[in-house]
Image 1 (cartoon, one colour):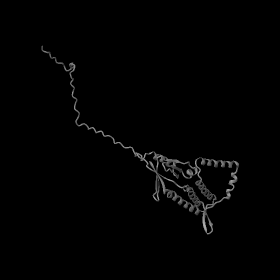
Image 2 (cartoon, rainbow, N blue to C red):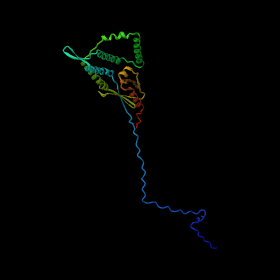
Image 3 (spheres, one colour):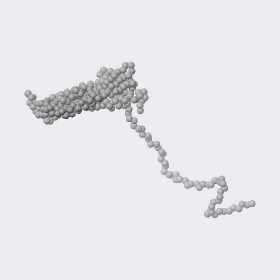
Length: 279
């Protein structure tokens, strides 16, 4: 029996395909061969974060009590300036000198000199310094309440101290030279070098050196003297070091400048393990 072929018009629906028959896909038009090339992807360079350098050592200088004598030459130069500006020429024997007409200039310089001597030789630490300040305030208020200040101040008009310009300049210059040589030269002849795991005492002249192991070592900031360390020393202090081991020693570093910051840096160095390198 011959199958009957039937042509479908172009507008009619497509024939129904049997199940499992693949549907032909229309070929997509080819893209232009001259399309813009795609730029290759490059990774942005990774910038390394700056690492703060780790301090590997700290040098400590111990100053003598002469470091606190700077108010003497400072006030002396100030009084010399006042005498130079406001002074009067007075003939003494065969010489003509310049003297300030006020009697208080010499009195103030003398009192500063005496107070510096007292405060640098008497140590009032911790509670003692606070008690001393309270005692001075109590005596001041007590004398005012009893009316004794009028009698005490009545003696001052009879107290007159005159110093000429040459004395202020010569005395202050000698004090400044001695102070500078002591603070910047003599006190730097011996110093302490703190490193992770080691404390070394070194001497410039002679090349002597002595090392201590910091394991078990105790660093102690001693009680402060209000007048010496804060008024005259501008934030100085004393550090006590107790070593460990068979030969125990106790070292006292007196009058270390900026003692609070130095103690913090010492604690950071002691926390570093000497066997493990740091970045």
